[in-house]
Length: 196
Image (tube, rainbow, N blue to C red; front, top):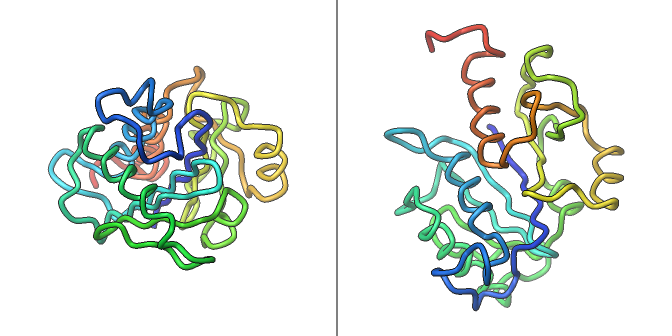
């Protein structure tokens, strides 16, 4: 299974943000929601992938295999994130709150979220090795930042834990675009098979 962990640096953990002001009041919630869409949606379907949005000490998980009534627009995804943030009292310890089918909230930050995920941990970063020069990993867990650099604490954590540090291209691109490029790399078996 493909998984994406997205570290948010401005998104609010307050569930009272307006769906009409995702870039402002939501603290760039629009970026996170577009990344969820890029990770889960194809032209006519939904991928068997997971997305973990790490917002402060909370993680909102979207599971493409079990999600129901999830739409590809940022506003409806933000509504699910808002519902998740509103359910934090129902998440106890490491037991998540189930918000809706395929959407859960964990009361955990980045380190604990990474502890519970299985797979090859890959940090996506503009200073990494180019994707095209390596073979795609099995069961990848890609960790990327929103529009801000990783914090020093996140960078140190990932330096210790990541199996690989890769970049998706010669220029820094938006997180949702990085997710789409990464899917294409995996879909084509490292840009070698376009028949699949």
